[in-house]
Length: 184
Ligand SMILES: O=CN(O)CCNC(=O)c1cccc(Cl)c1Cl
Ligand code: NI
Image (cartoon, rainbow, N blue to C red; front, side, top):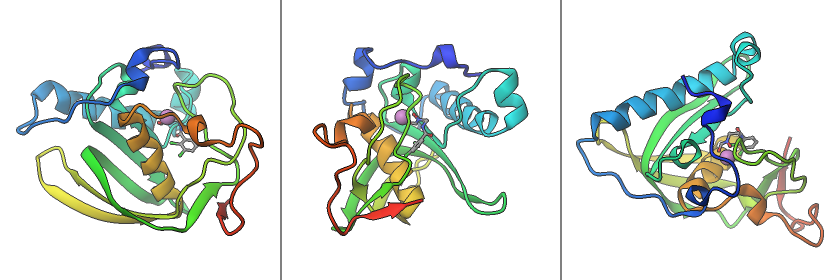
C-alpha cells in the first residue's frame, strides 16, 4: 500500500516535469499503480485506516506524487451524505474547454507533496470539460463544475509540473477577481 513516505515532496524535480503520455494497451505495471493510487485515496478517507497508517487525506493523487512521471491521476471526490461525486482514474487527461468564470475553494488547497500550509485562494475555472482515457483505453469526455472541477484541475496541474501555490497571488494571497465564486 502507498504510505506517506512513498509521496514525493516539493523540491523533487519529478514534481516539476511534464509527465509522459501513456500508450495503450497499458503496461500491466501501470494498471497496478492505478489501483494503488485509488486505494490510497480510499484509505486516506477512512478515519480508522488513515490514523493507523498516518495517511494525510486526499481527494486526488497524481502519478508524479509517487515518483512516476506518467500522465495518470486518480480522483475520489466525496459528495453529500457519503455519496461519491467522482471516482475515476484519468489517463492522458486534457482540459478541452473551460469557463471564463473563476472559482476557488474558500479554504484554499493542500497537497501531499507540499508539507507546509500555503494559505490563499487558488483561482481555477469553475467549469471544465475533460477528455481522457480510462484504464482500458476508452476515450471519455466529462463536464465538471465546482469542487470536482477544482480537484481535477489540481491533478492535471501535477501532470504539467504545476503545484497549487503557483496560482496564489504572491503579494496578496487572498486577492482574487471580484466575480470569482468562492466554494465553501
Ligand atoms: O494532488 C493531490 N493531493 O496532493 C492530495 C492532497 N490534496 C487534496 O486532496 C486537496 C485538498 C484541497 C484541495 C484540493 Cl483541489 C485537493 Cl486535490
Ligand atoms: Ni497535490
